[in-house]
Picture 1 (cartoon, helix red, strand yellow):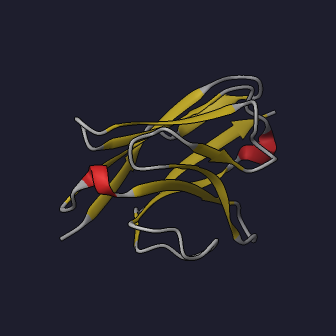
Picture 2: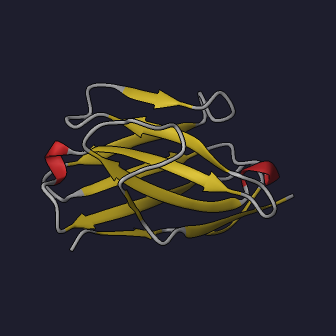
Length: 121
């Protein structure tokens, strides 16, 4: 079965950096488009970043553009989210998703369990 396992979350001070990873198994990773979403307490889950199958195109929410970078390593079946200049409003659970096609801005075929990122002021 398909599994997406996020890791790398934690506590970081404002202005700091963190990289979260998502290891995929049970699917042909190089065929899947990958995205990161995040959900802050009491708020809806929102798109953060996306990357195409071979990594030639990336997409970002306005709130993270210029600070976050999504990348992937198809040899390792892993997608990354490098987060720089973190701010308290970046505090959320971060989820990775996998889709053959992006048919919805809020739904995805497969979701990971999430990793908590907390930014202290």
